Length: 406
Image (cartoon, rainbow, N blue to C red; front, side, top):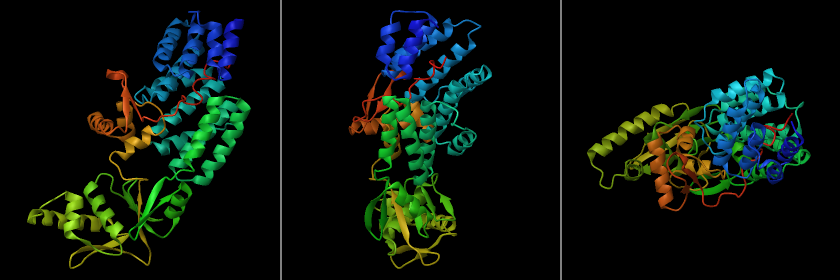
């Protein structure tokens, strides 16, 4: 590397994209293009960054496999920042293998973390945890260790393991201070704030209150029967009954749980479950069928008894029945939860993360946009969606080490 390329790489590693551009903005050789692409990504111009990095990858010769692999890793990081989750993971795996084979262990580790972060975003928690468990961050520089701890914290939050998440964030904060990368420090602080915000509501005996993650964790370990309206399941500490693909059954379970220990009239159940304004015998017959199906599903946890006016949920053993609801009831809460990270998502990325069709996702986004809850920019395949109050910073650790570890 010549002196300008080296200086630009060091500036990027320190989180100074403008300083890097001051040195190589007018150069079109492949190393300079790669660094310019990284700098543009850190500044938030992801489309321009992709073009520059792909030009750089094409410009590197056959004997520069490591440089080309680094460009692929950088391109994958941009796709992750743009929430383009359809980006081919096989290309990232191949780049990681090239980097590891040539002894570039730092960037190989970076590529591995990108893969794990993608798995977390699309909800493949077990697979992400398996890949993370074989990784030892101790030999790596502070930025890589901080990224590792952020991934550990993200996984722990998904698992509702608050103590593990806080410990990992403390380690991430220490590593971020050593790395002296401002965006990384912001990322750690942003994730820390999520632990201080209400994560759900507890509804019991007609009253509701907000819960932090620690309180949800304690609730899951208690003897209570929890009707989980965040993950569409009914569970206690030993059993879990998933109703994610049975919306009618879950609606019945939630209605019965919110009224417990009182019963719920048939008219109320028909109105809430089937939205029947004028119920007839066909609706009543269907209600009896669905109650029978729910009774079979919940048999390990509770019974459903008929009363004079309707039905009541009766737990097995002397314990409470509670509802764990979203922080506030609103349509398409899962979409808003993903957009709450402040990044601009593609509709295809949202559909992949939530395991729904792209057409279903587009209808949800259109409804949210009509209510002013989300906004979009771009057209066609470049269209992205975000919440109106998104944070004004890019994804932390956006490529500062991907090209600067020579």
